[in-house]
Length: 100
Image 1 (cartoon, rainbow, N blue to C red):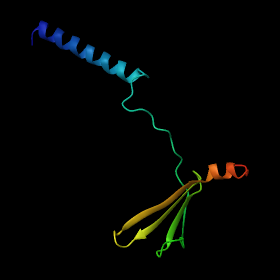
Image 2: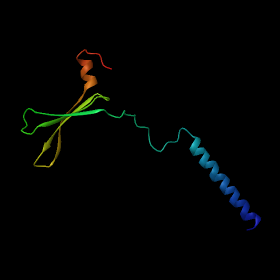
Image 3: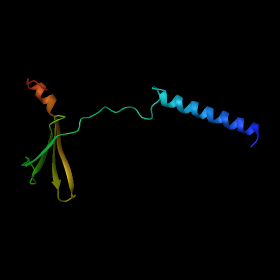
């Protein structure tokens, strides 16, 4: 290798290292916007009757995030169907009970 090609490779490597450092240290450059963090759930599942349905419903409560989801098994489609969702924190505030 002659001196000219060696100098060119050194300049190219220096430029690449500089670009890498700029991208790494720059706080304004992000690949994706930061999604809001959600705490890992603490789930409880209970089966019960649902008005207007012959199949039993499944009520799933996430105590950490204070949410409730109701579903039932649709035998003809062979999949879970959503019945409803409730934000328990909103419900507690609307009823006048203190939330966490």
